[in-house]
Image 1: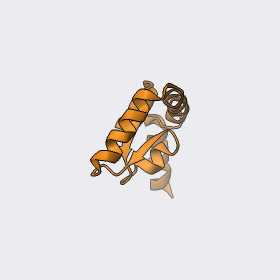
Image 2 (image 1 turned 90 degrees about the vertical axis):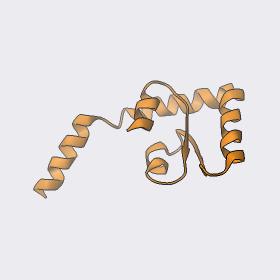
Image 3 (image 1 turned 30 degrees about the vertical axis):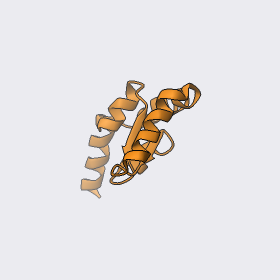
Length: 83
């Protein structure tokens, strides 16, 4: 949920390409190999230096964050238990 919370507050996201991040972020951030210092540094520099790109991923992130809520998580979990 940390990535969703960050998107909700307009923070540009750089995340490791593994785990659930590709599914959560989609095109709302930058996915990198977290063990590759150059790739992480390049992503950080792009977010810092490319204002248009940064604004676009923030805008997408704000919209995507609307898809996630604790209420929805509870309702879908209950639905799974009933099925």
